[in-house]
Length: 255
Image 1 (tube, rainbow, N blue to C red):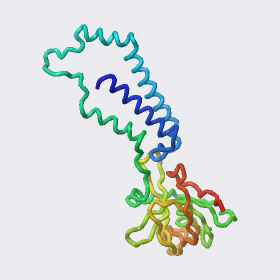
Image 2: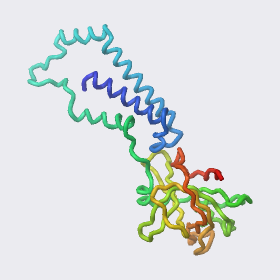
Image 3: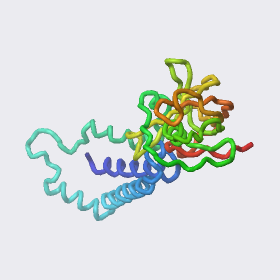
Image 4: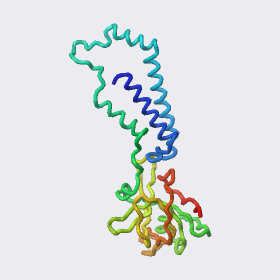
């Protein structure tokens, strides 16, 4: 690959990473928040390398050195009959990811991914803190799942809870799931946690909502036979959170 092309690729890649991680929140579609500083550092380094390479190449001394190399035969093809200095066509494909970070960001993961992922295995717990007296109780989907299937005290029984996630339609039954996708590191290892909703019609896929309701009875509460399901009383549309790939508590109601 010719040096000018290398310089442009380094600069575009650096600008793309900085755009996604420093000037916008696009990087949070692909990696956890804790990796943002490393992306910023990588973008800055690529940009500096590109600028340094450009200065070295087009600085008067650097240009003279380039001409001198050609004068001493550095640019000859040594009798092979073709020029190896041309940029291979496939190398131009390297510009696509750099340009995509600047001008076109792939869509965030959502219901399509969640519908094809097995639910995340919930960590075994032996102790549960008492639920707060407030009603409804703000709760993550993972905590709700754990309490439904592992809390022998059945503290969740009859309690009104409030959770936030996005809509994943259940095409088999016509119902829907309240869903969260969780990153351990990045989009490649995303796992889903889902709570089946009853009592309300499904909104369009990927709609972010806050749901209030009570556990949907079935099986034996506090054991694996209990369904991870909610009888929804209210469903309120909310904005997609900035860092959507964590199982966070719902934001306080604005009402």
